[in-house]
Image (tube, rainbow, N blue to C red; front, side):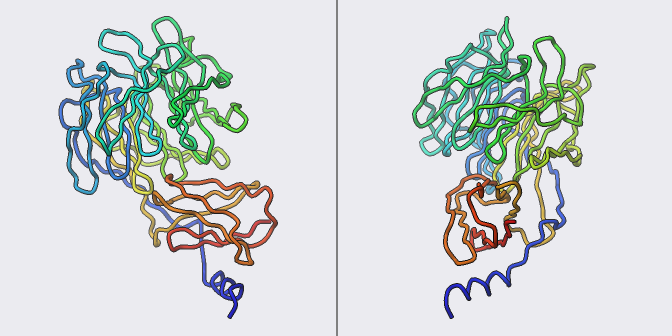
Length: 389
């Protein structure tokens, strides 16, 4: 039997229903060592959550970082953060290293340093400083290993500028500004090679509910959607399996929230999800372990208690869990990927037309120059068939 016949037989055996039912579950999994804190940073590398900086009614512990391994369910202190104790910093992960940028120190001085953490050596290294104005309450996202960073404020100015940092070259590049009023305390995340930024407070002290999409290939912004939960700041956001999630925060009346919303970038649609367990809160930090769960850490409760809790949000499929794939508008979208895997796409003749290593839980593949017909997507010993029309 030749390879083409084997492939056709294999395709006929493959079935995929993208509408399988899904359950989403919250659980409170642990409490952080030390004091509770808000306006901290968190990040996840492999199977470990890292948590540090922030405000706990003082800054004595602000540059102590802790690491929580989800497999051993245990905490340990990691290398002391060598910068000034701070809150309102921004953190991102690229190539299994973490980067902490900016913030405000305990003397109320806005900051512009960039610190890299290597979990293999357990060391912090100072990198080239951020070339824009010193600031806190800035935000950003990571696309293809590059860190995008902007907005925020200092004591006299709010910002709508945006920048790109290349961790490998250790350099910064100025990008187009957001086409909106400067703002701080916004939410942000990246999905399928696009960035999303919104909410927060603008330079006229108005809380916002708009969400904007950034295209790095054209360096352009466009309006995406209005957040259905209403205007707020001090909210948190993260991604899991190809969807964005936004919740918590505070509105203009000072009311805090524990709501949770799912954002689908395909069509810019929203879905109200199960509320967080525990109190309404603001100043929460979030991170995700790909294809496993996302985690909310710390925060300030509606009774003004600085929290030590970490809540886990998991997606559980009723059917056998596998990756998902669908196509639209010259793209194939793939989600629910395990970390550190190779995606391959074969055409009906068994020829490899696409191959890429990914360490993310979702991926977008351009099909603009592909012919219509049947394709098979292969990943981690599992396969899905798609027909491009």
